[in-house]
Image 1 (cartoon, helix red, strand yellow):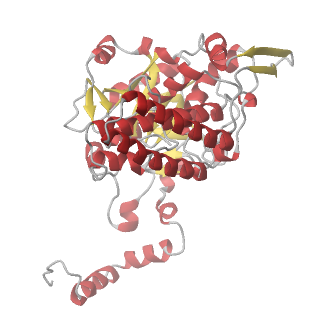
Image 2 (tube, rainbow, N blue to C red):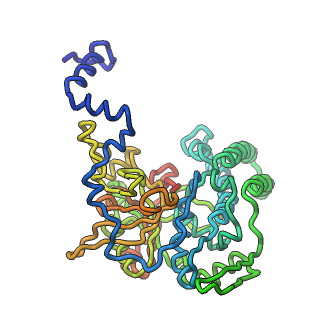
Length: 456
């Protein structure tokens, strides 16, 4: 064996080639993977045979139709509205129903841009250099589609909800990248203006006046791309008995408070996370610096608990007939076509002679950038064995009926422990010692911390 000095010399490259072709299994694997999707080639037949979409406990009414966020990063909005609509459908005797995802998307864009501009002023007043890590981080993604639980609560509490028929989808809702590109450029341009004003000693009044002037342009761009929601709505619908009904004229906030909140109050729900990094002990409260979407809105708070606590509360919620919003690293060990998320779903070791992802702990994957919360969905069913052990969950996604089992996925308990990061349950289900953590002064994590990653 030739000792390498770090340079891939001809001798070293020859050794790599020889070692590869010495093993006939590598040649067989190469023949397979050069002609097909390498992930599909690694799917375990045994897992497919043993994974059945049948559960011991299931919520009474799952929402219809299956939703589809298309090529946008709105999963956090879709999943929240999917959870809220289950009770709404039952209470109003509906066959199917959707709240308007586009409505919350519109207000998030407006609020998020305003929040960003104020963050630029805040960072400038703290003498953060434009080349520094914080401002570079803020400018890299001035506005995006992703979000967190507390952010959607901000939107609902301030702007309410409307049925989808009252504010339908638009092109830029379903394919948001072009609109986002326009907004990003404009926000970076405005950031330079604001930083120069701060550097020149502008008063707070002058800075707020400048941001307001900028927001007129931002609002115009968003309104042109998404449409602008009406101040009042009238919702006409038939219930299951084909009876005509009408609600309104009514404001979106009144609609939420009068017709939705009594069955699903977002303020009664709490978000619990599981971050196993040694630097962030369980039973502590955290927040992320500069993370949010509404100026004056609630903080994004993380009540850090063990995976077993989160899993148990999810099961309890489902048994109480309440679906659960959750955030996870969806693409890890996901068999997309069959909708299976299982640590044993892929036999990478058999194909490549080495395993993938599971050689690092959950904490290590966070530290080394290999895993984080990137997608939000909803639990609607759970399987518990005769000994009280949680085995698997049913998941309602927002990728349309072509993914998984007509839009639903199966997620094992082992997968939950490794790749689920957040869940939202009603506070009435949460033990007092867990709830008491929310009374702590939150520990502030830096803006770029992986727990601040947004679900999209």
